[in-house]
Length: 275
Image (cartoon, rainbow, N blue to C red; front, top):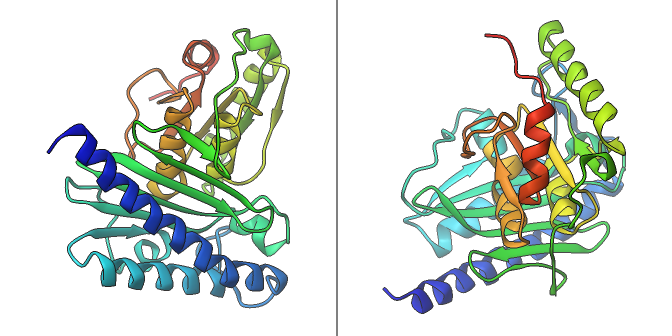
């Protein structure tokens, strides 16, 4: 298969994924207005709503109908034990029906649908859609990243002191982990312009691709949090890696991204956890 043929195939997948996100947006908007009802706990602070389940079921059924041989890794199905979260060489759709569920429940507009497609463990299509703000971020490997059709590029900031940095907090609230996260917040804050926390990993990363945030880092992320957005950052000229200066992969659980030079500088100030 030629490179041109591959690009055409990926574009077909993008059209399909974009259509799924747009069609699921009606469920999303309705749930957003009714978000204080039908909220359950998956963990001490990890929320799930009927909207999560409704959107995920819609997307899974649509993928199975269109591509019956493809695999699917979806947040709520994995949490329920209905599927594992392994990313294989087979075409694998990676779905977060509502990224930023806590925001969603509290009617804070930084929340989105995230759909990625990985082939041979490499994400080739990414769609992140915030229906409340009508922000559709898309990327196809080798074809750039876009917001509502407009090409994106990461910021050109090369000085960490001038950087606006985004981060997030995991659901694991053990004292040891919280102490380490707060230590890194202190270190980063002393070395950058300021820190923001939106509450949606996918949107944090899309805002890096957009050039609003210069950097983003977080520990405790899952494949569905970052799969689609990682490609969007890369296709916007950014670099995605481990927080601690090693190669990134979807099962790592940690991430840092930004323009290539600046993300390296972030790696140099982050404090590694003690073994």
